Length: 327
Ligand code: BTN
Image 1 (cartoon, rainbow, N blue to C red):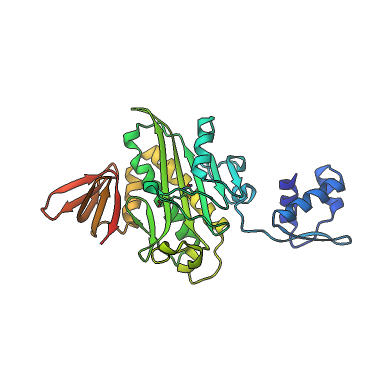
Image 2: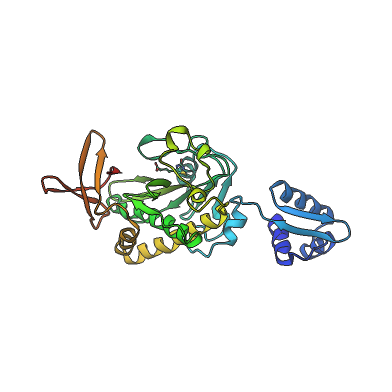
C-alpha cells in the first residue's frame, strides 16, 4: 500500500491530496492511509500533512529504495521489476548476501543494495570502505550460460556500465578504466568492482558483480591511508551533493543494455567500449600476480579481455588477471 500511496502523491504533487481521497482511491480505511504515511515519513520521505488541505510530497530522500530505483529503470534483465531489488540499511557485504541468495535459486537480474557495509570486500582480499549513505554498494546476479574461461569480458563489462552510468548523470566527469575494472578520476580511485563466480569446469552457475562507488564521500570519510589515492563523484564534480539514486539507476540501466548486447553479439562490442574508456593501454605498468611482478608497456586487450604487456625485452605476455599499477 505504501507504494500505491507514494505513486498517488507523486502524481498529485505539488497539489495536496486528502487522506479521504487516497483512502477512497485505494479502497482502504483512512487509518490505514495515516499509518502508511507515517511509515513513509519514517523512511525519510518529506510528506507534510494538514487536516484541511491533505498530504503533499515535498521531498524524496536520496536512499536507494527499490521503489525509487525501480521507477527510474527501463530494464529487461537487470531488475526488470522493483521486486528484484533487495534493500538493506546495513549488511556485512552485498556480495555475501547475493551469493547466499544465488545458492537459494534467486533469478538472474537480482540486485542487492545497501546503505552501508560493515565488512565490504575488495579485490585481493582488501576491504572496501563503505560509510553509511555516502556511496553506492550494490551487487548484481548474472547466470550466463557460458564456460568460466569466457567470463573475463563480463568483469570488464561492469566497469564500462559504471563509466557510462556516471558519464550520463555527470557529463562533466570522464572517469577512466584502469585494467581490469577500477574507475579512476585524475588517477584517484572512485569505483571498484569485485566479480565472484561459481562454476564447474565447463559451466558458470552464477556471477555476482559487486560495485562500490564513492559518491558523496568526503576525504575525511575515507580511512587515512586512502585519502591520498581515493576520490568521490562529489569531490571530483566540484563539491555539490550528487544524487546516488540517479547514479545507481544509470549504472543498472547501462548494465542491462550492455549485458543484453553481450549475450546477443558476444564480447567484441564490450571490449570496444572498454578500449574507448580505458586509461591503461599505452601506459607503463607494473602488474602483480600472487608471487610474481612484471613491468612493461600495456599494449593491448586480447579478445578474452586479458592485458597484453610488452616487457623491456620486447617479449609480450598476456595477463588474464592481476593487479595493475600505472607508473
Ligand atoms: C576493489 O576495487 O577492490 C573492489 C571493490 C568492490 C566493492 C563492492 S561494494 C559492493 C560489493 N560488496 C562487497 O563486499 N564488495 C563489492
